Amino acid sequence: MPWFNKPTYQPRGKHCYVTGGSSGLGKALAESLVKQGAHVTIVARDVKKGEQALEGLKALASPSQIVTFISADLVDPTSSTDALIQCASLHGGQAPDYIFCCAGFAKPKFFVESTPEEMKDGFDGVYWVTAYTVHAATKMMVKQRRTGKIVLVSSFAGYTSFAGYSNYSPGKYALRGLADALRSEMILHNIDIHIFMPCGILSPGYEVENLTKPAITHKVEENDTPLTPEECSRRLENGLKKGYYQITDNLVTDLVRLRSNGGVPTNNFFMDTIYLLIGSFGVPIWRMTVDWEVRKARKGIQVEYEATGIYEAQS
Amino acid sequence: MPWFNKPTYQPRGKHCYVTGGSSGLGKALAESLVKQGAHVTIVARDVKKGEQALEGLKALASPSQIVTFISADLVDPTSSTDALIQCASLHGGQAPDYIFCCAGFAKPKFFVESTPEEMKDGFDGVYWVTAYTVHAATKMMVKQRRTGKIVLVSSFAGYTSFAGYSNYSPGKYALRGLADALRSEMILHNIDIHIFMPCGILSPGYEVENLTKPAITHKVEENDTPLTPEECSRRLENGLKKGYYQITDNLVTDLVRLRSNGGVPTNNFFMDTIYLLIGSFGVPIWRMTVDWEVRKARKGIQVEYEATGIYEAQS
Image (cartoon, rainbow over all chains, first blue to last red; front, side, top):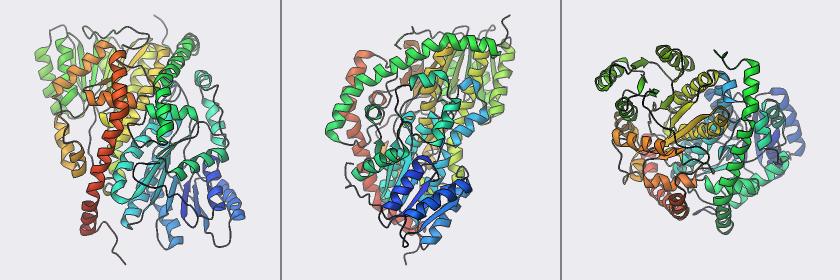
């Protein structure tokens, strides 16, 4: 439970805005929200996938529920604002009550093998795809003197990072920086900020991610067990029901959370004290094993760069 | 001391590349490096300020030291790469040994009072101004099979954040995400990554920053004592000499560091254990007082937004 507020999450009758709502976590969450009686707007770039997802949502909704799909490229600030204005027009011009920013993707790749464009696209597709929506939504909410909830989706890789995530972790850390600044600043306007820090999700995005993932990154993650989007969404909503600020979907992330949270409101005081104790020893030990794996991979990379001509010819 | 490496910081005879080298921390650091016998390239956008700083450096250098200034806009990836190639040409085409990324600025402002352009410019001037240089430098170093050190400069506001820093903390957190990913990945290439987390620095940038800083942000920071650029630079180099990965310039940041480091190599094991113990209680308490200050400012902001027409007219 947060320090001074009672949890107030209750989607029934609320207008919920879900970016990335055509697949993965966003789709599963939109379905859950519709089942709970919310009005739901999903936003996605791909029209075909968005319309398919909308059909699925309509099949779950009662006639009184307003369920819509908007196609928008959320990496653009104007499109991000326009999408919000468009969906508000179906609700008397009012800003949505709950904003869930689930859009984003990962394409892990070694830093020195990436182009500046890949670095930038990787970053934009993690950070700005959410930050512009959060910006437009808070401006609209404050202007209309409305309260509400904004949920950012970061990642385990937004707490800590390792080889392969140089174009992904910066954006996920940046989202945490934005959430930390706004959790404080939005106290001024009674808007609740939450941030979700999931591990792997068994989504179409996860399959794409695995295509470019370096071998050492796979190795470090080999013991992870990604969750289905439905289970992941259930754990996110569970955290919201409890009023948690930083919501995780497994124990390991909880251990890292307390080593990386900068003193923000914790979740369960008793459990968090135990987690902090374990994490204080456990997280650095985990980190040492990761460094060890990377160190073991060094020789192989050097041989590969020699063969592929990434190194300059030896003189 | 880091886990597996002995500290190796020794600027004498090395080619040091300092972005933001015409003022503040970068200028003070460049002077110190020249005094220690390094070849120094400073990079800055403003030609006049850069040339002035260069004169100062030349006055400190012996005839055998190569000291240069390059004017470049480091928010652009091509300029960032070109600047490195240009300075390498004075050193037989070889990449610099040490890269210090001191360029950047802060313009704190409330989120809902900012435009998307201000958000983006704020971010670019913190993150990309460094990330493109780090990217170009590591590519050049790896290609040439050279080792070296890369120092990123984040901030106290890269560990934790509060009201006023929504266009600043995301970039400073992102730099920490980049450093965390690269500290791991660059084990593959024997390149050392360090990140500096200073508090306020008494520089021209600090004065600019204070012009746009909201009252509540000033209030939260009222007990801070900013350091001179020279003292700040001395503490950075002190951390490098000890081989620290995350370098701070005061005790409070050290307390926050251990709550926010995701298990990366710690500094002094004995002191860090004590800091972690204090920080585990102290950091959340500090955070509560900050929340309390923001909560107290709420009424004043609401009155102001009422008066300035940021709120829509009440119906």
